[in-house]
Amino acid sequence: MEIVHDGVMSPNGLSSALTCIRRRRQTRYYKLYTLFADRIRRIRNGNTEYVAPTPPSCSQYCSDNAPPTSNSLTAQWLEWTSIYSSLCEVLMQHLKVRRALRIDHSVKFCMKLKNWTGSGQREGIADGKMLLLAQNEIGQIIGRRLTRSENNEETEELLRSVAHSFQPATSNGDLFVVSDDASSVRNMVHRVFQDRVSTKQDPFHVIQRITTKVKVAKRKWIAKELKAAIYTVDREMRPTQEMESAFRHVVERLSLDDVSCSVSEWRGCYESNLGQIRRGDLFVQESVYKEGGKAVRVVSTSQLEGFHSALKKLVVRQVSAALGLRILDVFIVRHNLRVGAEFGRNVNVGDLDFISLSHAALLSHGAVAESPQLEFALNMISRWTNGFEFLKALE
Image (cartoon, rainbow, N blue to C red; front, side):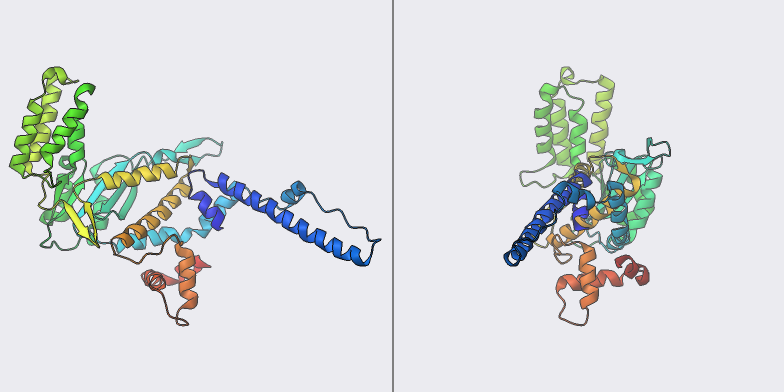
């Protein structure tokens, strides 16, 4: 099942796993063939008249011992990994937000999810057009759901489900939600968190809004100048008034001949982004968060967009909704444990899958000294609301 697991969690899917299984079958055949020939040689040393039976050919052996079909292996894998959906929920519920929460939608993953009808046709998921993810300051995914669109109603439901993860604000800085469009989510964030959490705008999308309305010849230059207007040489955010002045100075250096849209559209875009800067949506006192010897920029959605991009590269083929969502859960668990280990929030379990780790933790508990990895697995198991269902899933 480990080979099947690695195959499903690869961009090529089970095709590479089936090829590996067939290759192992062929290798096993020739090992058995060698043992068979050695046995015949020993018999003939004592009986020169012995007539050996004819062994099956390699193709016949592989045909008799062919691996199950792709559909059968997929069904077995879904049953074998059923624990991951619950594990993903439990793990996300116990993650913390100490500085910032990033939210972002993407359609890339949902485009690969299909439902196969009785006629054999593939249809998309009606209520799952976009994948909405919520990520804490170090990059761990603490919430996910499929949405019909970027409407605030579904986004608000996700924010309320992760509100318990926010820790009290400290002297290191306030708590805030980072979005690629702070203006559209500001009221929603205030309804959920009141005044204890503010809303911040990802600077990259401010720059992107301007550059997309500028002709190609000037885009590289304007992007570089706007970046210098927003950040200091130490990569910290400029104070609001200084940032507004520098931003206005850069944009006013452009002539209308450099713009690729209408004058009214250009001025509306320019004034809208300038208003966000004036409101303080881009400024934080400390834009770099440090923990566990590592540093990460918090007023940015690039980390979350990077997760969406990695997920897109993993699921490059069309898959059923059940299979795609299970791959998502396994991927989130792996990602969260890896990132948590990098920042010192949990032990490093390496590339070991949680099912094998849980088996070892339960079977060895109380018999020998436990490693930090086994203690972590037992701690996660103890957080399950229904331990019986967890043990049943491990059978």
